[in-house]
Image (cartoon, rainbow, N blue to C red; front, side, top):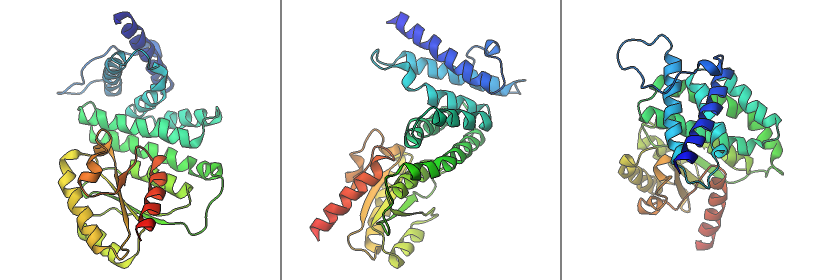
Amino acid sequence: MAAMGHSASTELRRHLATALADAGEPATSLPGPVAPARHGHSPRFGDSMAAEVINRLTLAHSARPPGLALADAQPADALAAMLLRHDAASAAAYAEALLQAGMPAEDLCLGLLAPAARLLGRFWAEDICDFATVTLGLMALRRIRESIAPQMRREAARWRGAGPSALLVPVPGEQHVFGLEMVADFFRRAGWQVQILPIRAVGDLTGMLRRYPVDILGLSLGATQRMDLLATIIRKARQASCRQAMGVMVGGPAFDDHPEYAALIGADATAADARQAPLQAARLLRLLAQRD
């Protein structure tokens, strides 16, 4: 078991070293894992940060079950490493190379961009990188997502005309909406009319719902500590909606490990990822129609 973990760690380090070398640093000069400096300034801050990332990823992958191939997570790990080096150009080129190699745009979104975004969030939570680095990284991911959106539409069999409507809303205080934007892409690909509405207070949402009929309200939450707030938003949204049969879906990191929370706070459904969201929403609409 130890030998297997060492082999996986070596392979991961080699893969990430290659990715970082593409960002302009020779792979042979990649430093060993070190903790990020807390005081003063390192002469090569990017190198130290990248080394710490490799250290964390090495530990994570060496603990994986033997049946899970290391290659499953390597592309997202490599992309995250490039973003931590502030090399958006290499990140974009890396994604483009995968598309040119035949990866469908939908798979690129779910298998590369979304996991890389989650890694950035995890590294911020673990104090490996700062908020500015995460923000710049998500901006780079957003540009990649926007660049492949036309291809996603071309891959769709056909667009419906005036499809059902979905209003996607991050809970007030959420710092990033990259995941929600990706969900919106998949809804549009399925023929939905979609709007994303950032709100500062619940009143912003209830005012919108009083004026405009919405088939599905989608709410995104990052941390379980704010679950009570989300429950309040759902209750007030239902009271305000001018469409009596409005469905409510929830998603985001807060539900990744506990999808059962959705029912507990008054939502109708949740989805495991962006691909499943419009499918679950369509099922929910059918259920609501049957109730009527």
